[in-house]
Image (cartoon, rainbow, N blue to C red; front, side, top):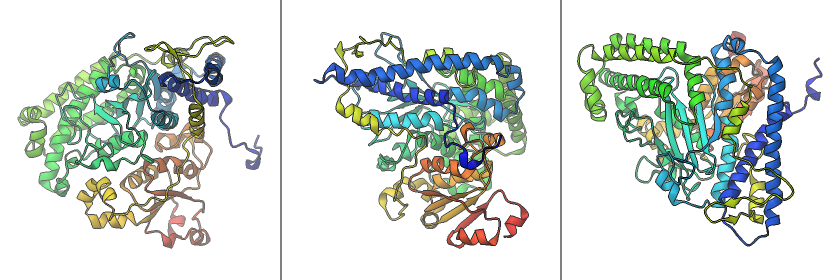
Amino acid sequence: MDIGKEYEPNQLEPVYRLLDKLTGLAEIFLKALSTEKDDAKSLDESRKPKELAEKICSTNKIVQKTVSEALKKDEESMTDILKLPLPEKYRKLLSPLRFGYMDMKSSPSSTSYTHYYSYNISQETSIENSKIIRLAQEIADLSNSLPNDHTNAIFVRVDESRVDVMKAIICGASNTPYAHGCYEYDLFFDSRYPNTPPKCQLVTTGSGAVRFNPNLYADGKVCLSLLGTWRGNSTENWDAKFSTILQVLMSIQAIIMSEEVYYNEPGYEHEAGTTEGEAKNEAYSNIVRYCNIQYAMIDQITSPCKGFEEAIRKHFFLKRDEILEEVKEWLVYADENKASYSSLVECHNHSWCQKFKEDGKYKSMLKEIIEKLENAFKGLKEPTLEHELKAVTEAEQTAKPEKKADAQAQPPKDASKGKAIKATDEDNKLLEEVDMEDNDVIGTNQEININDDQVKDRWSRYIGAMGIDAVAKQASAKILIYGLGGLGAEIAKNLVLAGCKELTLCDNQVATYRDLSSNFFLGESDIGKNRAEYCVKKVQQLNYYVKVTRCEESLSDEASCEKANLKDYSVVIVTEASLDTQKV
C-alpha cells in the first residue's frame, strides 16, 4: 500500500541492521578502553559505559542469530542467488565481508604481528586519546562506505586488539592492467596520527619480484603525495582535519592502479599520445598484466591473505567468467599493440623486460599463465548458503571476545600490567564526540588556492601533467553534473579528486537495484531514494577542498534551468537526459 511520501519515516532500515551498526561502535569503545592507561578514577566510572557496551554486543549477537534463523526459512537458496546478475550477487554475498576484525598477532602469546609494521606496532604500547577517537570516527564510517562493486571493491580488516593496525585488499578496477586482482596493503597509524598520514605498504609484490607501478615499488613502498611518500616536504599533502583512510584507499585504487601505468612516473606525462610513449606504456602494462594474474590472482586463490579468505574466494568464484573474458583480451592486445621494453620500463623491471623482449615470448607466457588461472578457478568451491547480512560463525570469529556480563562484572584488565582499566570523564566526553551519523558531511570553507605552497605541493603531480595554468583554471571552476548513473558517478569521483571550486550534482531519479551495479556511491539502503541526495555526502568525503552541493531543479524546461542558474557554471556535464531535455 502506498501511504504517501509525507508519511514515510526518514529511517527505513530494520532495527536489527541498526543494532548491528551500533554494535560496531560499541566494540570500538571497548577496544579503546582496553588500550587506555590506568588512572586514579574509581571503578564505578568505567563500569556503567562498559557494561552498556557489553550488553549491546551480547544483545546483538542474540538478535542476529535469531533473525538469521528466521530468515533462513524463507531465504532464497544459494542456487537462486547465483542466478542473479553479477553486480547483484556480488553485492549480496560480498557486502557483509567488506569490513571486519581479526587477530593479526603472530601467535596468541606473541607481541609481534604478521604485519609489515610489526616493529613499529610493538614500540607503541599505548594509544593517545585523540588517535583513538579519530580512528573510531573513521572506522564507523569506513565500515559502511567501502566500495563494494564487482568492478572495484575494497575490503578492510582491523586488528581486534589494536584499532591502529589495519590491512586492506584493494581489487584492481576493470579495464586496467590490475583488473580483478586482489592487492594486499598493510596500514599503521602511529602516535602522530591524525597530524601525519598513516603508514602504508604494498604486500603483494611476489616477494619483490615485480614493480607494479612507478609508484608501487618492488619493496612495497607506496609513493603517494597524500601519504607523504612523494617529494621531500609532501607531508603537507595530508590534512589532519579532512583527509581520511577511505580517501587514501580510493586514491591508490583510482590514481595509482590505473590504465596509464607508465605515465604515473613524474615527468613522463608529455609522452602520452606519442608512438614511443604508448609503446612503453603497453610494455609496462604487459608486465603488470602477467604479474597481476600470477601474484594477485593465482597466489591469492591458492593461498589467500589471512582474514580475507572468504572474501577472496567468493570474489574470484563469482567473477571467474568475467576475468577469463578480460585476460583473454590481453592475448589479442599482445598481437595488436606494439610494446617497447626499454628506458624507464627496463629500469623498473629489468628481469621481466629481458624475458618479454624475445619475439612472441610475452604472449606465450601469458597464454600459459591464463591456463594456470583456469585450473585455479576449477578448484574454487561454490559458496554455501548463509545469512545475507553476516554469517553467525564469522561474527563469532571476528568480534572481540566477550566476557559474561553480570552485576558483579569487573572492569577489563590490562594484561601487561594487571591493572583495572577505567574510563575517565574525558573518555566519556570523547565518546560523545564520535559521530553516530553515517557519512556526515564536514563543512569547510577551504578552497584550492593555486598560489598557496601547500596546495601546490598537494596537486604537484597534477600540475606537472596539466600545467599550472590549466590546474588554476580548473580550481576556480564551478561544475554541474546531470545524471548520476555509472558514468556520472565515475566523472564525479574523478573531478572531485582532481579538484575544482564547486561540484554540483543534479539527478531526478530514485536509486534502483540496477544502479548498484554501476554507481559505487549507492548502497542497498539508498534504494528508492534520490540518487543525488545520497551521493553528495560520499562524494564530499573524497576531497574537502571541493564544495559538493546538490541541485534540486529538474532541468526539464527553461524555467527550471533558469532557477538553477546554469549560466553560473563553467561546465555543465549531461550524462543522462532525453533529447528534449538536451535541447532545453
